[in-house]
Image 1 (cartoon, helix red, strand yellow):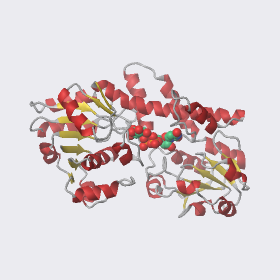
Image 2 (tube, protein in one colour):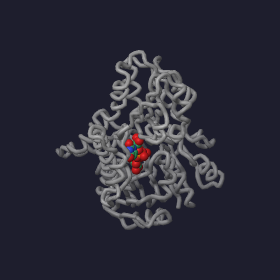
Image 3 (tube, helix red, strand yellow):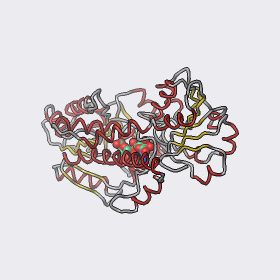
Image 4 (spheres, helix red, strand yellow):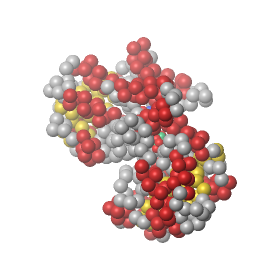
Length: 431
Ligand code: UGA
């Protein structure tokens, strides 16, 4: 199959690479010529384990190419996948500018029957809008389909090649058949529905996962007060198949480019049809506050933070990514600075990304985890990188001025901490 993927962000790039890996001929298109130039030279703009190597091999094999020309790629393709960004507007609504521009341009370059599918996360009704925009300029036959994406950063290639399910939303048998053929080698779980339900499935999935996280975080806050252990509570409730064990890790809340954006967008979508999505508003509110539990614990341990050196382990919104978008670390470091503290920060891969957007003279950028802890009055762990979980706690204790550890991700078990002199503050667990 000849496929054009429009947009080389996370979703576009990973999808393009994986379709090529399945044996198709893929051209990834982007209007950012510098980015295309880099991709042609094998430089991948995102940190995603395994992607760079796969990409290089597929380009060598001639199955994957990069282009600035939407026209060339689309004219050749039988399937066009739109994967451009839908960043949040000021009011939380998804900004449809890029999707609409691509749809209009597609209308100019369609030269025969094609299936146009939208992988970007888009409000209900967008696929129909895409159809209208194309049909306003191109009078031949084509179909649209919604093809929501469920990959996670850091495991994007694995998620795409081993999906729990593939959702296809379309009213065209021909489009459904083509998309079934494309995804058949990946999973037997192909779920076909109408376009609007498919668009809704994406938002509802992310909103539900965010709800699980805020739920367990509130349970953790209560556990701290009643002397229960949230990790055991999560395990105990997760054994009920109706609840399931995943996404019940208590911590400092969710970040990233998806949950914060999509929860707010769904609240906005509901608001547009005069529905007050109270539950999801609470989920967002709980998440906004959860991160500051780290500051409360530091203040519990130290009193005032003014003038204190505080070590910060982890800046990325989760491990195995250099992405710091909406990372809880941004506001935590900001609050530390506001309280007069001097953060000494370290992250195995996200230092540059964090520094680009959030540099401040009060921050000391450290070259290693131990360096960040050196001479500190307390250390807080914000991202559960494996490197931190495997840290030598005795060396750590020795490096610090006072052995106070606020573990925002419950990385350390009581046994490991028990053999040290640390005052330990986990989330929702007795010390
Ligand atoms: C999320 C979804 O998991 C994907 O299915 C979806 O495709 C993607 O958004 C998207 O819409 O593009 P992602 O943002 O990459 O993927 O990351 P997750 O692994 O879901 O983690 C999101 C946040 O939740 C992280 O900050 C993580 O630390 C937090 N989290 C996750 C918890 O605090 N507790 C948990 O139990 C799980």
